Image (tube, rainbow, N blue to C red; front, side, top):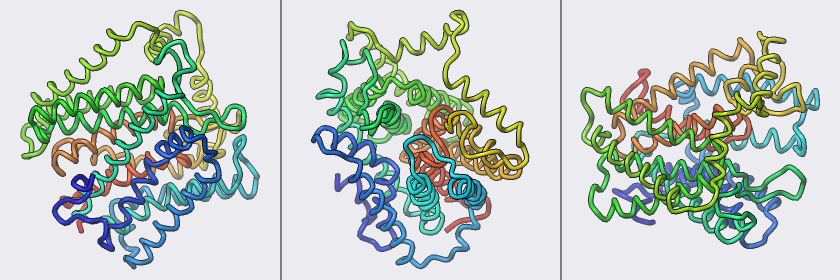
Length: 430
């Protein structure tokens, strides 16, 4: 692990870099310690709050100690920070003035998650990120994703999946103390698996350590990632991995030239074939029902069966809420049951309206440009892996994530945008 995290002098002990492991834990640490607490039989509610509070304190300390110029926020992340600022006004007004809260949530929880675990990480990247931080930051993200996958897999095999007739016949999750809540949700489990698969896919497609031992290790890690996708049985992460595969094919097929460490079309096809072989192998070897596959079959046939899914209802309510107040938005939650629309685009529409949407769209455009450049090899093989992970997270953002409660998504959006500024895109470099 030391070799992964510390290379060519990129040590966390450097004052300007020690925010990196904190940011990685903020983005991807929760599934790791939630599964660990579940296996140890420890109630994680209070411990989770303590860990989250420590993360916030450490990120604030990193900013204070670095004493950066706040002009840095006028760079690549300016549209995202502007959008967060407008959304913050909506959130504060709804929560503190109108007392609008989702079920089982408190004012401290909602505001703390947004300002401490969404806005603060973005501010940290905007103020402290430098070009030479890319490698150590992407390695820190990978380590947390890797550790999270191993712990979640251990939880699924030792307790979370044994309640079902077969390993993949249901959804693995750790239920909360209150009915309808979960301390470790199936989406988080599937997301970790998809991110691990995307990382390995990016490394293989770009020729990282292209030798037999690395391919064997990659097959094992792909198996871990695919297993967690099946344990979670959430369609969003699975669709995210499919979108990452399609993005890789598109980028390599239409690239006239690539950098030394960019993805090649032939390697991409070989890596994708490996992923497909893994899926086929699991499906062939497993004799029982696979719930994720059943859910996709149901999704494809719902029109013939006359079925309407909950998300379809949420989407229609979101559109109705937006049209009821298109200029400034209506609320940070839906008018029905104070729920979230499970789509960050629709959530932005109902929260900030037409006045705030241009900053959201602007941020999304910079995110897409960043992904495109990373897949093109602007930051080497690690950048290709980061770009594919960004595609996974962005896809899940359209089906499961939220603006105020998805630190992993917004950490990666900010990281991807800052990565695209590496070669002076948007006239900015450090």
